[in-house]
Image: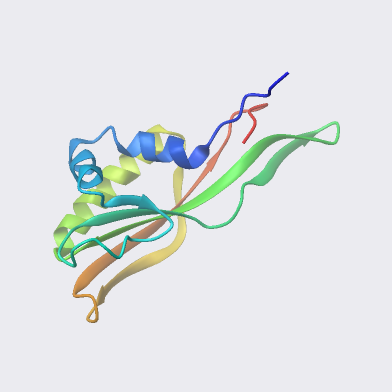
Length: 133
């Protein structure tokens, strides 16, 4: 029998795509996981979903893992600081609806080398009990 398998990274991306502005960024190939594509124009806004490690066991019962913890950093890069802030506000709302909460850490910087603002925030979430990730 084949066990059902879930992909939390795909679920996070799906949650973000409920917003039309984020859909536009995805259509322009600016929504990715792990790192910003080098092929993107420097002036293009991007959203990067970066897992900060593998899933961790969060709940155990009878020597079996029942739930997993996930930590993601969502990086928004733009030449417009306010655009970063507005997108992060939407991302926070969407991830809260998906069961994630913002946690400490992240970044709020302007990088002179890239001429882009980066607003990076970290979110923590847990799988449902008995789901395989």
